[in-house]
Image (cartoon, rainbow, N blue to C red; front, side):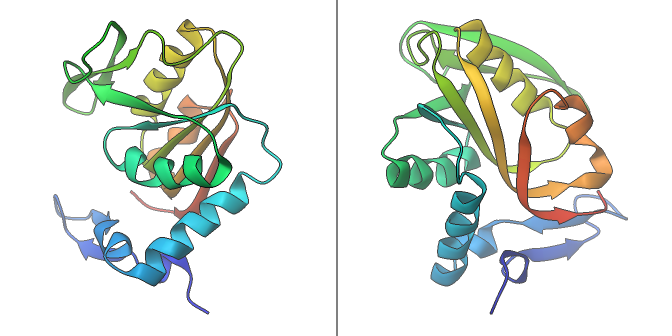
Length: 174
């Protein structure tokens, strides 16, 4: 029986020497790999009481949407700045080199709603922390952060220590 990590292509020395890039496109391009990835993420949501699934741009959309569909929950987009057409709130956060801003519609999360945040990868945790802060600013509660892959060597869990964080596959390095 194959595991999700069997579908992940590992590319050494990309984007720089000493880094192993974990390529999620190889999972998406294989029907069995994609189905297994979604099934394994669903298992990590077993027993989680939630009202909304929210995904961060763009691969959080890819993995979050089927979860929302299977759970019969609404799906909320957390997008890069300037991409959403209605009134938004935004959060700027630090990247390794520079910063980024994400946004969410002001009416996307209602006060008291329980939210699962989804992305393909947890590295440093900055994007997901900013997404959680947006949800909380709107009065929502983040009940789970779910990732397909985790790069444990970048210690993203430390930044997200107040949240329930789960990943299907954990890689020890960066």
